[in-house]
Image (cartoon, rainbow, N blue to C red):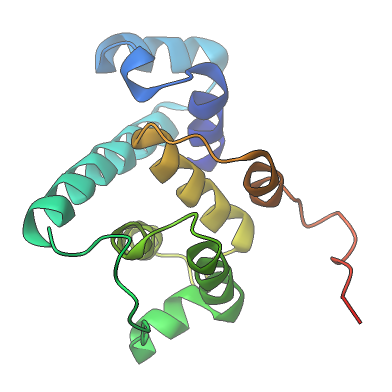
Length: 158
């Protein structure tokens, strides 16, 4: 599923540039993706759009002006893991995500049902959220979202 999401991000500069579902399914199949992966990815994207819409309607007061601290429930902490939670907090402190977007990322990560959430998959979720909202991450954020596990550990400041 995540390979398809990355393919969509790289191929279509905006979500509205994607063809309709039937044409997109055919195109993804022609590229070589399996039918069940295509279905899972498109369902996940549909759920992302619905979640984004629902959160915006249900929580209009949540915005970039929310300065509270997010406390994770035990189930969330177990499902996400420390690296994923730390990365979400980093993105929020760097003003890449606001409080509402953070909650959408958490909801979509929990929907994957992979515990603990691998950091590379969480980065794709963040990227797809920003893509779906028409937001282009700045160059430094983009680099951070595409660091791979094969790269050396980040340098520490002393």
